[in-house]
Amino acid sequence: MVRKRQALPSEDELVICTITKVFSHGAFASLDEYGGNTGFIHISEVASTWIKNIRDFVKEGQKTVAKVLSVDAQKGHVDISTRRVGDSQKKTKMQEWKRAQKSEKLLEIVAKKVNKSLDDAYSEVGFKLEEKYGEIYAALEEISTFGREAFSRLSVPEYWIEPVVQIARENVALPLVNITGYLDLKSPAPNGIEIIKEALISARNEKFGEDVKLDIRYVGSPRYRINVTAPDYKTAEESLKKCAEKAMVVIEEKGGSGKFLRDVKEEK
Image 1 (cartoon, rainbow, N blue to C red):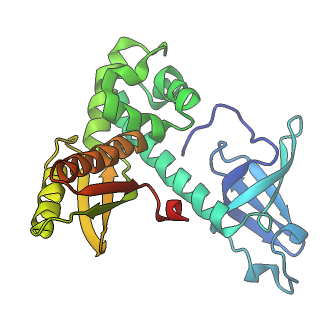
Image 2: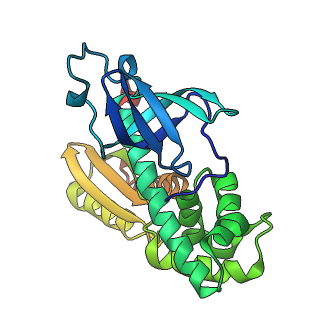
């Protein structure tokens, strides 16, 4: 069970829940991220269409995403809605849930290595990372990339740091971004095609980061498309610019001309 700092969710929050009991007037659901505390879905909040049989829409054991309508902290009562959650919101929340589950498993492994409990892992390192990075998995991605630097300004006990860095680098796949730019190359020389080819080869052979992948494809005279895959947008943009500049330098040295377009819409 993924842990949350607070016992109950906040109003308007999206929550993961599991339907536990279904009645003619509504359904109860356990709030999976909040210690199994219960939320109630009134039949009017189950679906946006007319409901003849509520069991056509919700069933015991079904896991879904709901929006919190109201919270009575004193009574521990939470009203939730499934009809107010869009498909894209549901998909995003489910992905976050899966990431949170993976994060918890990794924290549990680290906790065993340092002879601590999972509760200790959350209180001493997990929640602190979550507060800084928004979610623990996002923090593990940063740790996988930057190592100890990702813990800067966090009061995390030293014995957690190296084990967390190790587990992140062994188990967390870094997200990649893809960007595209366009390059117009022209050469009036008799061997212009060879000059353009030389410019593109020089650009492709420039030194980029180990995690950067570059692909140059012919679109139609005089245009070439450059696709860059990198760990982050800054690296991708810098690599794209470097590639284009190198090609333009080479072709201009040979009497030709080059123009870089971040987007073909720039022509309009």
